[in-house]
Image (cartoon, rainbow, N blue to C red; front, side):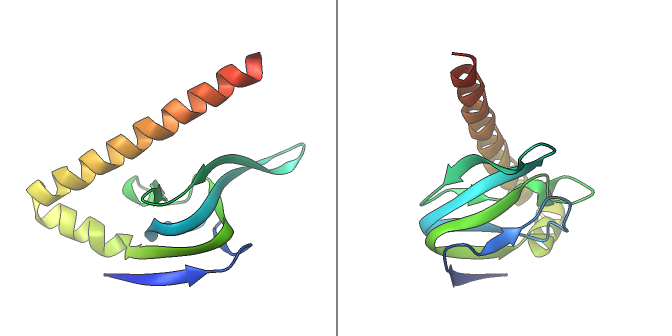
Amino acid sequence: MSTVKTYESGHRLFDEGGIADRCWVVLSGCVMIDSMTPSSGRAALQSLGRGELVGWSWVVPPHRWHFGATVVTPTRALVVDAVRLRELADADPEFGYRIALIMVRTLADRLQTTRIRLLDLQN
């Protein structure tokens, strides 16, 4: 269900709109979350490092990436088969609840980071 992989700087983990069938937990290194903008192309949104989850779109149907992600520095990560993780969460409600808590915490952190960034842009 999971494996540890190493990625070199510049490696593209996923693109917006692609099938979200896995997620990563960064063990070391840095991954940049980004989004495409009409005027300037790819815009960096947030960097994620050790202990952080990369990719949450696998939780919400239709399981397509909402953002993109690129490895910034050599990165070692635990790669999780999200399709299997969803199956296990569906089969075991207690496990599913624990996964949901992790995902809500992740989304709350991302929203807080976005809020702070937006406030900085206004100043």
